[in-house]
Image (cartoon, rainbow, N blue to C red):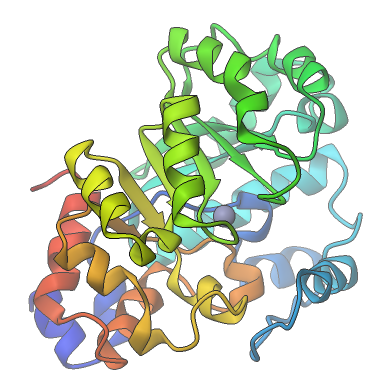
Length: 312
Ligand SMILES: [Zn+2]
């Protein structure tokens, strides 16, 4: 059976057997519900109806996550749960990493301990997965604070990329230029969350200011042909998370998800999970939902899958 046939027969178990990349995954919320239940006896319930505001998402987070995993053991459990989840999903390239503040909070300010927490979990649970270790920044933190945290990260070749997330409107993207300059010197792949809550113009501003290689979300680009052309010409990849966009009210229905127009316009897009524990999805389900809604054809979905894996 091919991936196209698995989609056409709407067989999720078969879809899960095919290799996929997950390049947009926040590991704290990326784990397997089942694994966490088994290890802790604690059940995390996903949302099923679209949220009306970000405060509803914060309320969900407060209720189900809160400070329950705020310890070295808790954090390591969530890392393990993420590898377990990815393996079950057929993910073969997984890009995840820790928030920079987590180094002091959970890993005794010991960068080797943080790196090893990810490597050890991978080796124990899913050695076949290619781990792309990421450095994570919250957009609401002050630049001085972030630079201070980052001083422990620079120079460690284990890191593959850097990403900026949190409230997209918290502070101007230009504030992060000094950080991204150092990240570029360190050879990191440069990413940021833009164009989820912001506009198409915000995407271009961010790419120009930070010299981004890839954009997390970037779906607002669909509203501006010039931005679409720019992304195509500059080969900027968009790592898209369809269910998250629908459940956060960024897109009204899966059938209307901008990924179809972006892909058909020649923009490099990938399909990813974002937050498995909140949105009750995984990468395989994202492919199936896009197929079932008629948003993309099975052939198009296979092309996106293979591109994400670097196979075409
Ligand atoms: Zn995200």
